[in-house]
Every structure is written in C-alpha cells, then in structure tokens.
Image 1 (cartoon, rainbow, N blue to C red):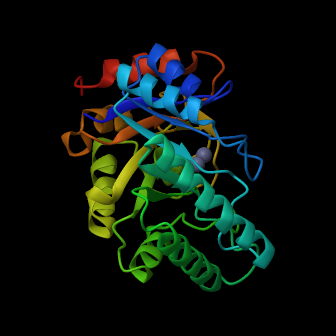
Image 2 (image 1 turned 180 degrees about the vertical axis):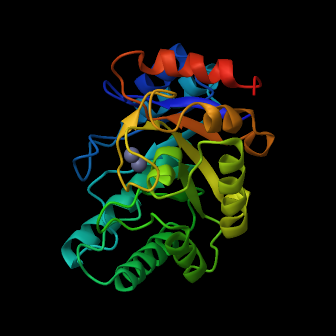
Image 3 (image 1 turned 45 degrees about the vertical axis):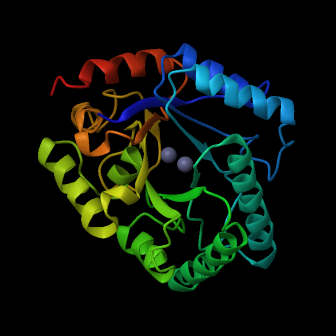
Length: 281
Ligand SMILES: [Zn+2]
Ligand SMILES: [Zn+2]
C-alpha cells in the first residue's frame, strides 16, 4: 500500500504546498522549492519553515519529497556542473531545514560527450555533494528517465553504475518513474510486466533504495523514449501497474506521487482513481 500523493505547488510559500496536499487528502507529497526553470529561489524565512513543519504535523501527509530544479546537470560542462553542484547543495540544505528527507534529481545529460565520460562526471559531482552534506539526513533519489537523446539514466545499467561507483552510499537511491520506465522500454502494462519491472529494480538496487515512485500514464508507446505525461488510465499504459503499485505491500512506506496533467480531471480525479484501484486488483 504505497503512500498515494501528488506533486503540488508551493506558490505563496512552502507551507501552502502542505495545505494543498492536505486538501487533496494526500498521504505523500512532492513540490519544487522554487521555479524549477531557475537555478535558485528565495530561501524560506524561519517563520515559513516553522509554518511548513506545523502544517505537516497537523496533516495526513506522511512523507515529503522535493524535486530539484530542471536546470541542474551534474554531468554538464564545467560552468553548468559547478552551478549545479551549488544548486543541489542548496536544495539539500533547504530539505534539511524543512525536515524533508529526500530530494529527487534528474541524472542529467551527456550533451554529446561519451556517456561513460558523462556518468563519471556525474559520479564525481555526487561524491563531492555527498561529502559536503554528510551531516544532512537527506537522500538523493536519481530519477529513471525515458531515454530521449543525451539524457542519462534511462537504463538501469547507468543508474547502477553511478550507485556502484559511489559505494552504494546510504544516502543514494532511485525514484522509479512509471511513465519514463515505460518510455525506456519496460513494458509495465500487464501484471507480469509490473512484477518483472519491480523484480528488476530489486535485483539492481534493492527495493529499500526505491525511495519514491512517480505516477503518470504515457502518451508515448513502450520503448518510444518519449516523456509525455497523461492521466492515469488514459494513455498507453493503462491502469494495471498503477493499481498493483498502490496495493503493493513492498512499497507500504514509499511515496507514489502523481505527475499527471493538472487540467481535465486534475489531481482530484487521478487520486480518486488510485484510491479506487488500491486493494481492488
Ligand atoms: Zn522528474
Ligand atoms: Zn516525465
């Protein structure tokens, strides 16, 4: 029974994200600490941090993740990489001050350089970040990606390479994105497909390393490499793996965060569907 939740806006202050998640009846939530198309945002005041913590305690939200800025590329050229390292350290410090214990991060892009070279740059940047923030109890969850172009992390091989190179640091994990894994070729559409994919995650990383799931259906077909989100059950994937995941006891304490479009049935509709699917398959 995964913790069903949604990505919510923190506009108006971080505590507003908790209020929104709470109003939706979320058991878990994810938010951006600032506009994800900017490097850094205004740090919340101590009053806002306090309001966030209070609102969280009073809510039914049991787990929170922060999604890092989209600009971050730890495998990028020196300038981008240095800025990215600073941005990730800021995000970790912010998570720590808010009591959030995981940060979801895209592995980055090779931007045309050899993939192994880019992965090694990612490894050394993460090594620096982990040691600079070793007193912070915040995990970095590398997101599984759909596999467009130079984007790193669409194969479990690449993510395993990074985790292995960092000695399976206890603060490193994976965010399993259903839409992205489907795009990368994991055919999760059937019960067997879901079970095989989870077995794969278990063999490669161990399920305790899967710190978060991202849930959306896909406009693209299996293995198409496309990353286009759709409402649950309205895309190429269908409802089966989502129902199995939210009913799966192995992910009882794991956030399952909706990243479906906000228009149409919106978060309310998708959350209602997940609740209906939970325990019914
Ligand atoms: Zn993401
Ligand atoms: Zn996506």
